[in-house]
Structures are given as C-alpha cells and as structure tokens.
Amino acid sequence: MLAKGKDATAKVLIVDDEPAFRLLAERFLQQQGYQVVSTASVEEAQQQLGQFDADLILLDLALPPHFDPQHTLNLVPQLASRPVIILTGHAERDLALKAISQGAWDFIAKPIDPDLLAVVVKRAVTKHQLEKELLQLRQATPVSSPLPSLAGHSAHMESIHTLVQRIAPTEVRVLVTGPSGTGKEVISKALHQLSNRADKAFVSVHCGAIPAELLESELFGYVKGAFTGADKDRQGLLKLADGGTLFLDEIGEMPLPMQVKLLRVLQEGSYYPVGGREMQHIDIRLVSATNANLPDLVRQGKFREDLYYRIKGVTMETVALDQRREDIPLLIRFFLEQLKEQQGQAFALETGAMQWFLQKQWPGNVRELKNTLESVAAIAQQGVIRLSDIQLLHLDSQGGGADTEVVDSALLGGLDEQVKALEIRLIQQALQQHGGNKSQAARTLGISRQGLLKKLERYGLSHSSADD
Ligand SMILES: Nc1ncnc2c1ncn2[C@@H]1O[C@H](COP(=O)(O)OP(=O)(O)OP(=O)(O)O)[C@@H](O)[C@H]1O
Image 1 (cartoon, rainbow, N blue to C red):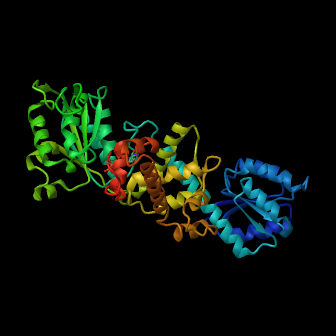
Image 2: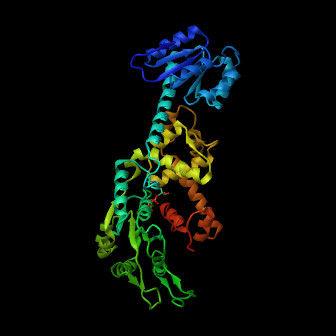
Image 3: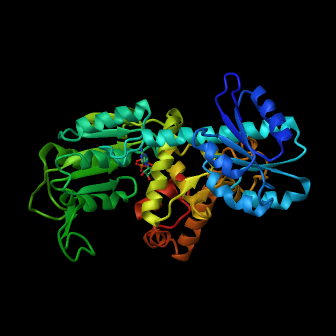
C-alpha cells in the first residue's frame, strides 16, 4: 500500500503484520510530511525497496511466517544501508538491544508514543540524509587530482591548487605564510613535485630547530679538521638539494649571522663549506615558509630586509581551518584513506562522530584534525569510528544521550586537550627515558627529531627539556 505525504521528501517503510498499526502509523507519519509505504513481511519489504528507496525502515521483529524475532534479526544487515528502527514489546528489550548490536539504529516500544516516534524517525532520517550527502560529496571529489597530497575544495584551497600548478613549473622563489598546521610544508612539497626538479631532492630544513652554531655546518657542510669532531669532509644540505628544491621552514627563526650567509648564496649561487677553500656551486630552487609576520620582523630588526625581498618571490598565504570549514569532510576522507593505505584497515565514521568533527573548532588546524582522527581511529573497533570512541578519549564527558546533545555540550573543545595531554605525557616519558636526548626520544616516539622539536615548542616544553 503506497500513500504519498504532502510535500514529502523522506521515505519511510513500515514492516509490521498488524494492519491496524500499519494504518495508524502510516497516517501519522504522512501528517509529519513523510512518504510512507507499509508491508506485512520482510520479503515483501525487500521487493518494495526496489521501487521505494526508503530513508528509514520501521521493523517489527515478530513477523509471519516464522514469528521468530531472531529470524527477522538475521535479515537486518540486508536492509541496513538505511537506518532500521526496531518496534518491540516491553518484554523484548534485550532482543532490541541485540538488534542494535547487529546494526539496527534504534528501538521503540509498543504501544508507541507518537511524539517519541516523531523524534526517533526524524533523527534517523536526518542521519540517513547526512550519510547520503556525504556519499555524494565523496563521489563528487575527483579521484585523480593533479595535487593528490593537498586535500580541500574550499574557494581558498582551489586558489591554492591553481597557484601551485601555475608556479610549480617556473623557477620563481616562493614564500608560504600562514598559521601553524595549515599545510605550508605540504604546499611546498607539491610545488617541488609538480616542478621540473621533481626527480631531484626536496630537502627540508627547520631553521628554528637547528641550533644557531650548527646551522652553518648543516647547510654548507664542512671539511675535515674544520672543528673538533670534524674527522672527515661532510656535504651540507645545500649540496644535497643541488638540482632540486631547498625548503627553509620557519625561516623567520633563522639567526641574523646565518641570514647574511644565505643571502650571499642566493645572490651568487655559491658558497664555501665550513673550513673549506674550494667554492661550491649549486643550483637550487628556494621555497620558504613561516607563520611569523616577516615584515614585522624586518621592522624589529630581526630579519634582514634584503633577504626578505630575495626569498619573497611569489607569496602564498594559507588560512586557518576554521575559515574554510567546508574542507573538513574532504580532509577526513583523505586522512582515512591514508590510514587505510598505511594500516590496510578501512575506517568509516558514524554520523554522530562525523558531526562532532564537523562542529569542533580546530585551533591547531589540519594538523590537529589529523592527529585527533588518528587517535580515535587507533581505538575504534571493526573499522567504525563512533562518538563513543571519542568519548573514551574525552575523560570528562558523561557519555550517552542523543548524538546532538553530546556534540553540543560535553565534547566540544575537549578531545584536543586530551590528545595534547597524552602527547605531552608520552614526550616527557620518552625524554626522561633517554636522559633528555631528543634524537633518541624522537626515535622512541616514532617521529623525526624536527617533529619532536616542533612539538616541544608548541607545548612550551622547549625550556624544560635538556639538550642533546
Ligand atoms: N590540505 C591538506 N591536505 C592534506 N594534508 C594536509 C593538508 N594541510 C595540512 N595537512 C597535513 O597536516 C599536517 C600539518 O601540515 P604542515 O606541516 O604542512 O603544516 P605547516 O603549515 O607547515 O605547519 P607548521 O607551521 O607548524 O610547520 C601534516 O600532517 C600535513 O600532511
């Protein structure tokens, strides 16, 4: 029996063998604006689904010919590409809970309270529609992008994509500015990968992470005997980048004496290794990045104006993730695909968890989003990331309740604090274990030394930890 509600958009399929219940529920849901179809058995329902793509199924468990709830339960997975709400008698509460563990969305006890029915149906339909939107979004994303490493389809990211593709094949120097964790290094790598230098090295140097007195020998290399411990010639990072791209990250932190030396290299394309007399010639493309305001540093006398104009070339500016929140779903998909490649495990996000990610503020930008997603994926079961997994990491949360309640109140802004706290604890433990030696601690933590230094700085731990 098909009945069309006025201006109906969402479709509900009722499966119940009681004609009186079907009639009442049909009428009620039509009044709420739904399109409704009802059938008396699961077999009939399966046939109906061919023509009536329901957004939601209301399913009684005791159905003819078997009247065996377990039999009906076993059929739930076949219907479950949309939410299934189980209709139960009071005595069947345990069964209803089991149904949920087997993929049903919710249950509602008979005799049914119409107000409750309206709420439960609305929530389930919203969930399904959000999932459909997400799927469309996923399908709309081109699989092979010329910039596969740089996810995002906001107007801002699209202009970054266009700029990267235009600038990459040229030799122009590029300065990427913007807040921490917004993808400045990813953009710099993409500039290299799409350049004519792609088959040569991309050498990344974190200017603030290398002690001032070591930076020169790291960049220029040294000859045997140049200083105590220089027991053989060593090539510097500039030489390693010869023919390729040199990426100077946090260039605003480069010490002034080193700025003078870098300026000379950029002007002349040559330099002397520390203690050496043989001039080295190199051909590098320079890409720099900073989250500092370089013109301000120039005004304060902390950054040389002549160097600023030398490195500036084309300036690209990234913006905070909160200013382009429409990129969040795509970034999530991107990181889940990365996880799948790394771990061979596919992950999906339950709607409640997705909503949480979509509503949360991300002061640490894409880096924070990625870290948060990876930490909840690490504790997810059977490849599904649920709101309850997020609650586990968020110790203050009360848990339970409707998805929206949880998202609106307890969880906002809390997970990142937990993740930070966990990171800080693990970093401190690793440093302690290695007597403050950062290289060894970084190895134990499975990150680069540079990565550890960044974290120490971000968490204000740089001064409390001993140097290598
Ligand atoms: N658009 C993006 N697509 C995919 N991954 C991204 C994107 N933006 C950032 N990331 C990821 O977020 C993390 C931080 O990015 P990245 O290191 O490039 O930021 P940054 O702006 O250079 O940060 P910082 O200023 O702290 O060095 C990295 O893991 C990176 O892979």
